Amino acid sequence: MTSHTALASVALNDVRRDPDTAARGQLVPAEIDHLAGRAPQSLAGFLALKRALTDLALELDPSTPADPLAFTLDHGPSGEPRVVSAPPRVAARGRLAVSISHTRCRAYGLAVLQEGDVG
Image 1 (cartoon, helix red, strand yellow):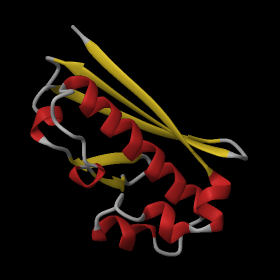
Image 2 (cartoon, rainbow, N blue to C red; image 1 turned 90 degrees about the vertical axis):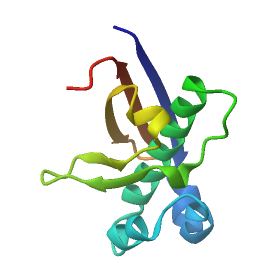
Image 3 (cartoon, one colour; image 1 turned 180 degrees about the vertical axis):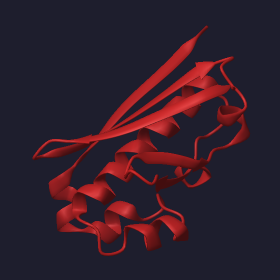
Image 4 (cartoon, rainbow, N blue to C red; image 1 turned 30 degrees about the horizontal axis):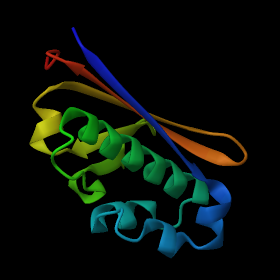
């Protein structure tokens, strides 16, 4: 089984300083609504995960531009990040696992695709 991994980070100060600019062109309306009123760490985590997902999509198909708006994120019942929708070139390839982590200064997004494990 082949796996692909992408890790990206976002500085929390960038998000705190100007959240609207940081999120511009990165989030779909449902994500903006979902994050309304949440701490800057939540926005930074989503942005870092979007970067990781677009990096992963580019690794899978370097000939096609990766669009962060092609991925929709949410939180599951226990607060874990989850991918609600992904472009077919990613979703059809296997099982996609994601994670978000924070330090005092940065948020990190991790995306792992295990090819062939669609069950």
